[in-house]
Image 1: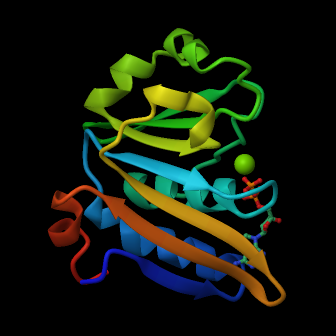
Image 2: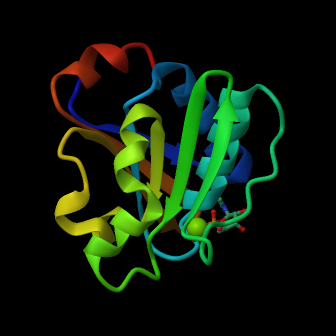
Length: 151
Ligand code: ADP
Ligand code: MG
């Protein structure tokens, strides 16, 4: 498997389908960094992923103001961050950042976390194109190669 997987997402439903495909490959302790500018589809992706993991359509408001929203998916706790409004990376500590290690972290605007962003993570970059979006999945770390097999 290549280090980088690229997908063309023609519409919002395609973004949701990619999230549904990724969901079974994720587990507690994982960090999914959602890169991309405003309107790239990060929240759309997170919404579909959270619903897929919970097995039920779930209302997932953008955490723009709350900065983090948590969800339970059976034994798994999902932490959905939007760090856009963060002024200092150290502010993540006030958001319960360290507790997220036992759950699954979905992070919009991940680079705002600076050095707090774990090195071992899955990077997903969404980009607007003339005909939808492109998604680039870049595993950072050895284990992911096997974990993402067949996606
Ligand atoms: P972000 O969280 O990155 O700011 P959002 O998830 O709020 O972005 O999405 C912005 C818009 O992009 C939404 O209106 C959504 O319907 C749309 N969108 C998501 N995926 C696609 C796609 N593959 N093609 C076209 N529009 C999309
Ligand atoms: Mg968003």
